[in-house]
Length: 432
Image 1 (tube, rainbow, N blue to C red):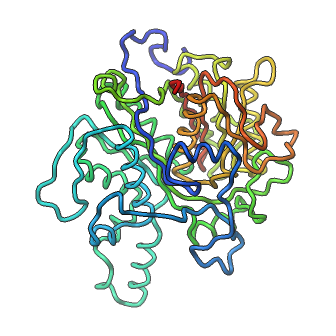
Image 2: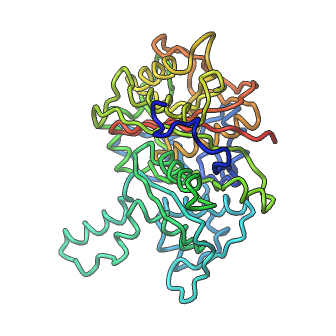
Image 3: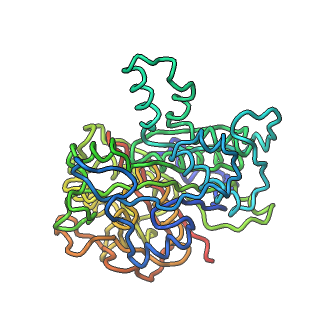
């Protein structure tokens, strides 16, 4: 075997399988995973002119915003609520959905100032990441320092801005004393945290993990940066693989799942959405921004994922592509899919959903995971939002306009983070 040290075929027959028992999402198209999938499948888009922040002077003025953010399901005190940044609230709300959806009996601890925390289990853990530090608390602190008011800097500045804070808060909330991971891999962050959780369960270190990504790309800093680095869409329309594509539209939100060891889930009678079968995680080792035309990291990731899952290209019915609608990346990703998954005939159905949801940054990989899982479970493939006229250099078995009903025995979701950080995850849905 090329990637696995002892070979995929040499694994014991009783190896630990990892299933999905809970889904939780906060997205620009809603806060119920099944309804969000249905809207994405219909080709609905949340992209619109930005309303929440001042965009005067910015080149990018469209995004996919989370318009309704109701913290009441968490039952937080006013003090707790004021101590949370937007990205952390996304994570806590998505985690609460996923925990309830999975039917897990967990405590609900206070986030601050508690004297008697209730532990749940040392075999339950968390893997949640954000791609960037939250700039709000840091900006406020720097402004105070610039004005000579060091004593006005909040003592909570670093805890409110660290990318690992969301993972820590979810662990505190539910008394989870297992491992807490917070991988940071740019746009591959959500996928990398799913992979960390998967490995933890498969290796026998944990039984349950809450995993995924959370992020807020609708900020002045993100919009200015994506406008300056020429990856953001000035037209305000994300058109992956299209001749007229001019870049990505930013989004925000969180996408978390409960991953669970299969026997553990069965023993408590949990509903199982499907199974995570394997992954690939490889680098381009090329550049901090550009992806090489040959897409070596994506190709290796796909090949490794198939080997890990003990599948062939013919087993993949759907690919949820990273599909950022940038000129070079779409061509390279299409080439990688053709090189690895298209043998005879049109190959697997392919779509990217950033045209509907915007680029949710750290949450994009875990959102793609959920959409791919539901596509396999329902045998429904969502379309690529914004795609109308396929660029010949991006030729694939594209799904255009509205969703397509077809068999999806297994699905593959791809992520490509800046710096050449690539991942591929294989899932198989359990029929509903």
